[in-house]
Image (tube, rainbow, N blue to C red):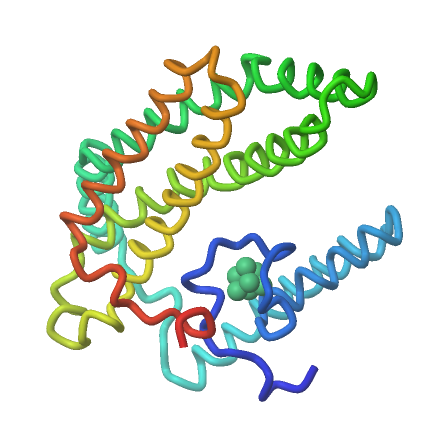
Amino acid sequence: MSDHNIIPGIHNWCDRWCEKCSFIARCAVGIKELDIIEEEQKGNNPDFWEGIKEQFTNTIKLIDKLAKEKGIDLDGIHDEEWEQIEKENEQKRKEGMEHPITQIASKYLKSGLDTLDSGIIENKLNSEIEKFELGLEKEAHSGITQLKDAVDIIKWYIFFISAKCQRLVMENMDKEFEDTEFPPEERSYNGTAKITLISIERSITAWGVLLRLIPEYQDEILSKLVLLQKLQGLIEIEFPDAMRFIRPGFDE
Ligand code: SF4
């Protein structure tokens, strides 16, 4: 694949679900992911991890070389400066963890995982498979597919949302620079907010499918939807221009 096909920066504001991404062949990260998938499909290849190790070593060498060329002193931070940076970071981390967006995202993560682990979805899936095998219900096959797709979506985004919310809160604390330098559609924190909102919307849709297919666990499922909607509302308030952000490739 020639370089001019690559969309620069596309991987910065996507959901990292490369397998399902229509831009996989036009994304620098996606192309590497394709290589990994191919290697995995070839079976256990001892050279594969060696290759990764080699890539890492080469990257470190490249960083050293570039830093020297640009006169950047990679060891140039003194102990006192480190201490100060660490203190500030620690303070930010603490404030970040206390932010309502982080709090609700982590509640959703915990509660969502509890439901996924509880067996209710698996039981429903098994009963649909049984019905299908016995030929009892024509709709059983579509129920199986919908359940599986919904669970895949929830599982993919459940950690992603939590991680992005933490990042969002941290980015929000440092936004003065971007606010003065870039228009809203180019501010990185709006990009993070946008992909988080998209992930939340997809998760809401997926839990909605479960709500329809497993009505006997309505309360359990509804509690996730409430958390996700609260999170969506909070992000929309804190980042009112999120959806204006133009993600390379996806929104152009
Ligand atoms: S843009 Fe697509 S292929 Fe690239 S990292 Fe994101 S999901 Fe993966």
